[in-house]
Length: 341
Image (cartoon, rainbow, N blue to C red; front, top):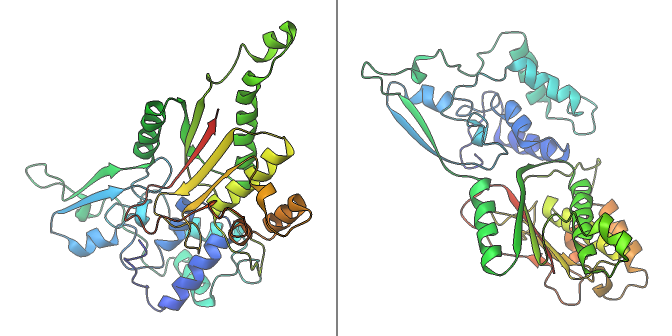
């Protein structure tokens, strides 16, 4: 949707850039962001279909949003917007501190437009009753939308590859969301439980731990979705949700003395935050490989506090933690893989 951007009068491109920056910093999930975006642009929220009417429109969709809601992917330019209105957009502004004086204040012109829309003085996005979304006499839909790729496809492909490499794959789902730092803790906890199978327990201990593993070793935990990072005002750190998740996991693996565990978290579009990295790959020894640092654990935690994962991971002696693929030409959200030997 970034390549299909036409500001609604009287907004400017600069207003939309500032709005996008504020929305990302607020930690708002993408589907909620798009409730606001639909009302700020001329083509989103079904308005492209209306502009094309009465032509027949076929839309092929690559989904980068959890659960594949067609009206939210790329802000649904050719899909009726039955699920939101001006009131919903204004409520999100209030809930996420986007209003005047808030931590992530939107441009004044955007706030004014949303308020005018809420009063009913501006047209809202088109709904299903609009003729652009009707069918012809032959029952052919004027607007047809086909999902051609999504996160599920990427995750299942990763699971198949893991199995070919000799791992026991476990797909944890494709709907993972939440703060990246919190989700990292969940993944490390699962890895720790799996790793217990390597320990020589007494008979009583075996009955409590070894009988209920998630999977046999070696194991590959594979999960898809899209986490978020909520940034404080005037944050100067550099990174992205996948890098922050990976660095948090590296710290926790070190704290738990977990080795033979590798975690990789990547954005399938090849871009993670405003960086040239797609994500990062770490293990239990990653933090120990920090160069020129006496207290590596404290240094890593300080980087996390400032959301500066990119700069810290760049300091590693082996220089392999940041995954740099370049733009992939597609986007089906994020994939995280945890390998336990």
